Length: 439
Image (cartoon, rainbow, N blue to C red; front, side):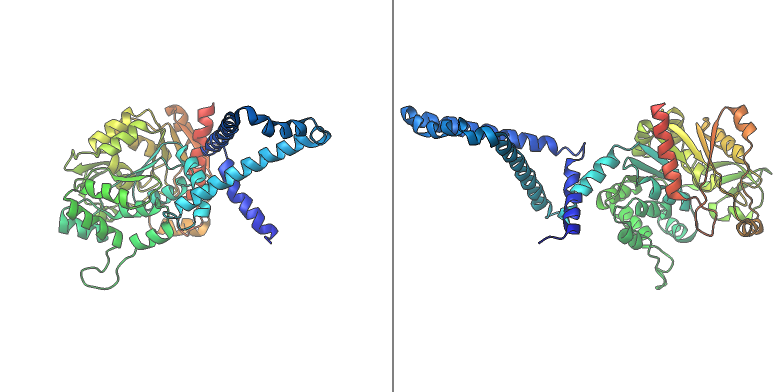
């Protein structure tokens, strides 16, 4: 005999088949209707076959329909038969689905939950997230809980670490941030993420490389094209969205500082103190992937950041075709401002300075700027001050004068670093977008 908890668990499983939007109830209705038509047809055909002898079949039925028992309980009996028939039909369809799905799913009994989740996420907003580094992968982990219509456009100008070594050896774009974002959007991040982000600690040639970087490099060599390598990766991995490089060409970052000097190479920028003013790529006009341009044209929401402004957020959008597509996109443009300034990049910047940097490079101001409202503890402030960083200030007057909306949400994450709380940020963005659509 089944326990009460087992019955409740079974109901939680079955109820998903009846949730609106699953596309199951209409098929059940058609199945019941079809069975009813078949039964009526069978009765009619039987009566036709009996010819003049059909009274032998009809008489007992007539006697039942005019008897006291029928008058007293006929409605209840037929109603119970209808309910029983529908229940059997639903159960049969569910078991048929489980039997068919057993060849593709490890736990076919969870098919209803998986289908419900997939359909729910498919109805979410079309979001393009642009940037690189830890900030972008954290944002994607939050957004994937709200929509599967996600496209990450990733900076590929990193020239340090594993990415730098592979760039130098193969003349390819930096794969590191792409690998992190692929892991972040994986349906099974626990397994795939651990695999892609595994860093080799032994072997003279392998030491320091991640498996994800090596996989992208291998596919790039096999396909003889970096863009095609990422297209193969999208097909191989089960993703809640898509991940694309801003360009499939190897590019080098060129950053102009406030003193007029030009620094070439992302990895050395922090060694030169003082704020940056402009960023460019070399070559100056690399081609953009068509998938990136299509995503920007179809987006509801485009999110810039969080991440290093001049080395993560701006590099993808200074690809000329991406800048044009972003400027022309009907999507709402959101800038998520870093919690702290970054030495060698945004020294002395406040939130409005970030807005001006975006406008200077793209020709469009953000429609919404998101800043953190959670105060930082003294210990973290002191640690960042020792690195030459400070809390990014917000001058509301500058935003009013510039006619740009700014919202302050509690976004400080639990990590020792001043990083954004990804679930809170994603929840805030999706909620704001939904409320704006209803207004």
